[in-house]
Length: 318
Ligand code: SF4
Ligand code: SF4
Image 1 (cartoon, helix red, strand yellow):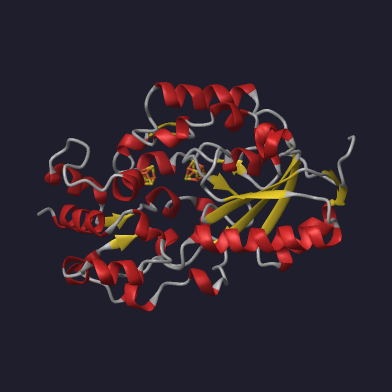
Image 2: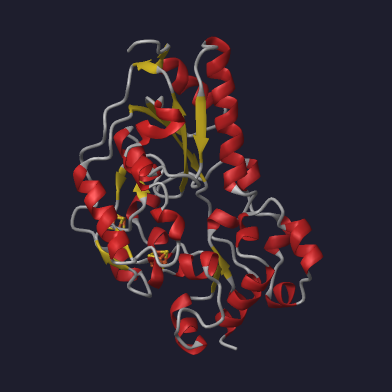
């Protein structure tokens, strides 16, 4: 294509692994296909994104990421970083999603994506790139499928045959052509399994691959940690939250594709020591200064101190 650098796909994949990612695929950007777009638009129409209004923003770019980078985005390098580990036993039977055990994954994945971009630019100085981690109008799971990294399971999570569902997805958009793209994964391997849908305590998976965020514990505890728990009484909410105070891993715990996945080896994502010792009093007695300092580099910062206190109250059915 006119005026575009051409970079070697094998080089990019090798660099991605060298900077610490567990998997990498590369895909040419096209508008998101009609079937996936329609499901997404219907999801918005049903208000199943709850009040995450950012999901409605930049809709045109979300459905056609070629419009990003001032219209020059041409290829997506999609990366996976595993955070698979055993579920920790917290005191007072509190539970946190494994995505929160270590350093904020946005920071960890971004740093690696930036390093990957620098490595690519060292060899191809004219190439520009933009990084995305769960933040901008990029449908990460869709692009991971297009890059051959897995399929979207009935839980709505990306499933990699090698790494299961406990992965963080990073995306690096490039304004270059790539010599050697990956093929999309067209096959899906959930088969007749429905375990995630059956296990979800709030029945938030309303259809295969479709999660109503209003009902999802992850949404309730991370994005909207209100004491009124979306209109339910605390007693009602407590029953279904299964003592989660941040996120929820239930639909992932049950997924057979996670059974044989090895533990990750990323030191930044291992359970922080102080968190391991946390109990009800740890959260109840916490002051803002401690929270700001201790969770500055944690995804728990998103929920805020009062949000975590609210989540603990609900978990305890107070
Ligand atoms: S994260 Fe929890 S509440 Fe949300 S869909 Fe999965 S099992 Fe259900
Ligand atoms: S639990 Fe079963 S249905 Fe759900 S995502 Fe995993 S394999 Fe698919």
